[in-house]
Length: 602
Image 1 (cartoon, rainbow, N blue to C red):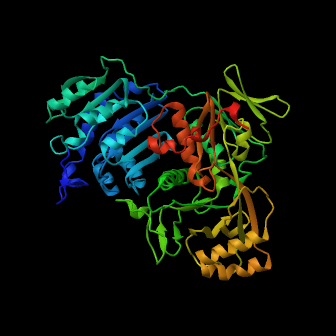
Image 2: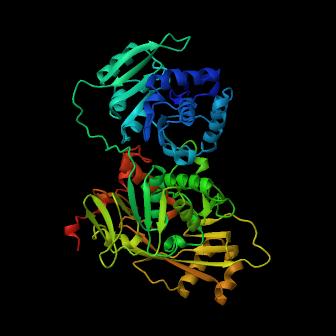
């Protein structure tokens, strides 16, 4: 859509104003339908397909996305999964998203749903989910060329949109269109409102067959194009799989349950096999945990990964759990050590992730306490998932193109065409020691509140964490910890770890420590122990190790942060979908980075 640029005094573009973009909100929705949907033969082109991938080069007020979403909802032959990947350098406000749809009743409610997730849009990638995870918006905030270069999928439709070419030529230059073409498969359809001669010539040079077609008055013409280059395409696109199949998931904790739910949403038939008699019996059985972003002075990989994971888990908790009972978006006060360097500034939207609080502290609004077991059970309740407990998988074998889970007597338990190993430390043996995994023992101190109840306060973290008031089945409770015993596997509580947790609490919240110290000293404070699984570099391991053999493990102490992110990354890799992360950041989680050939394993 033709959008004028709002220029700063220093000559750089800044976020466009609503009134500048769309003085009349009704016409742009008609343009979205006429130019982009009709220009890409939608919804007819996606009829009967399992998934559809749309790439857009300028999100603006989101009207193209809202139009596509509305068309998807109204189509009885819609694809199971609609991916919409859009690049936007300067996101508008949530209020402008709603205002943009104010005069169009059929998308007003969708706009409000979009606006509710329209927060914290710092530069980088943001995965927003709708319709129970069947409509996925991947918003890439930043320079269009850089964002396109990080894509790793083949689009079915391209909406070539953005500011008017003369006002912002970088959106339309040849190198940008080449980057768009690299995201296309032969047969991808493209649509745009401009008929500028240079754009037509550059599209043709990139392999598009271009034609002018009647436009929406007052515009006389628009463009539609088909990616069908005369030359042989030498690049290898990610293998695309539309037909769902059968999968085994070994492990019924956070990682396994999340993987099962992500596959089932895509139509897979999933069996989850667990040695325990109940889900979330291992480290995922923590009574309550803290979900919070990691910060660093240089906004390192872990910080960026944690923001992506926190956003996705917050969405899942909001969709699946009962607020105030199973979880709460409480925020967290991060206590930083004296002399610690401040975290890197994140840019526009930063205040919804981090902002200074009192001296030496940061406030994170995007944080929550969560009862992990509730989330595990919610994921296992996804239609298409069957959970089977009390089954110990001793080995895996590939027989006649299927993966078979075998018991200790080498008898088959279950089989499927794909297997996902998510058995924490037990994953190494099932993978013939291809991966090196490390145990990390953690002890959390906790107890029920007496009378009077504690003063209202948010959770705290830093060197450890403190949840001051969480509802558990036994009653309202506090939790603090955790120890981090590398290489330790003992499940027995330790008095010295209780003392260590109290010392951490004295730093995090001196008043709470003074109030709770008598419980520690009297030995009435309870202890919970879990053994977590970590990789050598403390990042999760996600990916395919052999045809049909996948892994999602090594979440360390951040299972709440990484389980859902890892599951969506695994599903996207398996089906050739748009990734929830930039390609280079996704590579930081790839299990192949530390894998050994099975024959070389000790």
